[in-house]
Image (tube, rainbow, N blue to C red; front, side, top):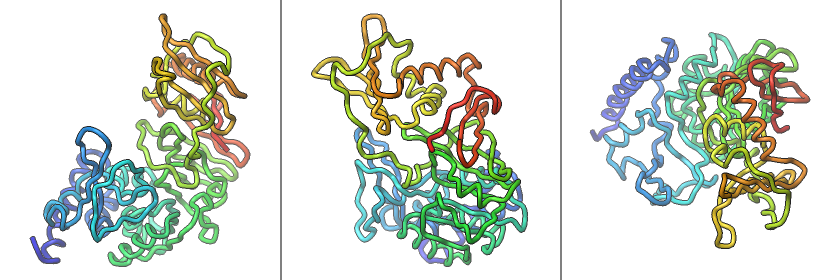
Length: 395
């Protein structure tokens, strides 16, 4: 497979195969989105990317280009249902001489097609609707929307200039001319409002108020809510005037957090050994890493992060630090279980244990039992119904 024509022919075949697979797996449900997947050349949007090398030890990503793996393998990888990384630590990659990358944080990617089309199907668009996309990324999902609705109906905002420029070239090169903007996605794009649909492909700690103003009543907002410890999941909200409400989806697709919402570099102050008050902990730090209880911990301690380390050559303790209020909780093993030492304005472990107990009293449900209500002045996640137990989102 050498010539450009051969690549385009092979790519068209791989797109049809990908569409068949996505339909079989239940992600593609409508002929319009299937036609878009079969038409949009993903290889134009990710001509070069990185994939994780699963060797043991430190996480490393290897470059994938036509030169490094050969044209056939490169094209086959492009059209697999995988997320491929395209940027780390907010810095552009030197593709003239790409090297493996370790000890880095991915900051831009091409999301796995099954999640892209699942979100587009959930967006429930109809002909003639205007859509605002937050997070252009590579431009692949933007192109799918342009194919489905027409370029003039699609506005997309990207925070990173280099990422936006590359997406713009790829979109133009594949025949699409949406409204592309570089800026803070939290602000949206008021000049193009009102929108019928808003879709965000990065995670937010809460719903930006500007979105409520720019999506028409009856319109939909589809975004991932996430915190500094973990993702909360995908929410679909219906806008009603100054407010919006809706439900989490059953599973937990995770997106990178919007850059403007990233956690502060400093985790907060590590408490001195005798700071705080000590009690027996009902539960240990496994609460933070299990899926259901981890979701509750994120709701109960939205400004906290945790890590484990040995103290003065002793056993490993888990530190939970709130960088906004300087509250802390330190969990240490004792003969009969765990003890917790807490200090600061918020009793973090009390809040987490209480949230997890509430969740268990309600039968330890999955995320689909939770909803969100958003107004200009407050936002909360609730369990069961809007009058049920609730936890505020960070403003």
